[in-house]
Each structure stands twice: as C-alpha cells, then as structure tokens.
Image (cartoon, rainbow, N blue to C red; front, side, top):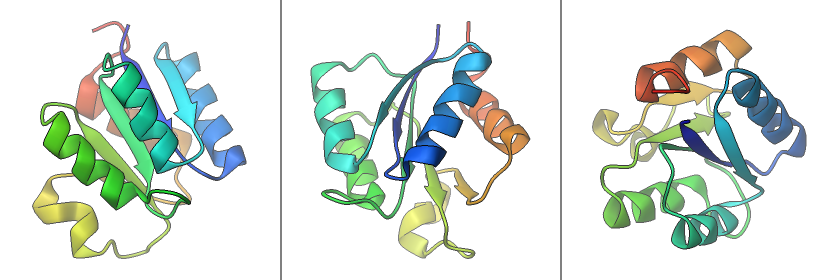
Length: 121
C-alpha cells in the first residue's frame, strides 16, 4: 500500500486531504507543520510521497522540500500553495508538482495518482 506523508497546518484541509486519500486506499500520516513532518520522516522513511503546504509554522514547505530532496532524492514531493502564481522556488524548474488551494477532490486524487500511481501499486 502506498504511504503518503502530509504536512499542512490548516487542520480542516489536512483532515480533508487525509480522508480523501484514505478512502482511495492510500495509507496516510499527517502532521501540522514542516518540522513535525521532517521528524516523522527521520523516524520512518517508508513513504512514497510527501505533500506539503508552503506557509507553515516552525519549518515552511520550501525548506522541508529542500531537506527531503537532499536527504531522500528519490522521494517525490508535491506542493500545495495558496499562491495563485507559485514563486520560482516553489516549482524549482518543475521539480515539484503543485496544486493551488483551494483544490478539488478530483485534482488531488489525479495528481497523486500521476505521481505515485494507484494505492496498491
């Protein structure tokens, strides 16, 4: 089963994403900020995808993505942002797929499937 780590400080959005992805069959671990996600990843590296918001307390999503890219270069990262036009450091020359908030259930699921495939693959 594919495992996804979510870092999102907005509780309602974190719950919505976690629920939508669990219903599709993904195993989800969710955290409220970048530092908590980084600590989780340090304890358990068995993730197939990290989804991170950009603006979060303690460690923002850009810093989290950069740390993950250095320590775990094969681990895909997806950025969720409220910026209508993502800054260059967010898309980093296309390195990180991204979704603009608010997003739909269909967009979330389609993007995740595009990155890591079906839950059981």
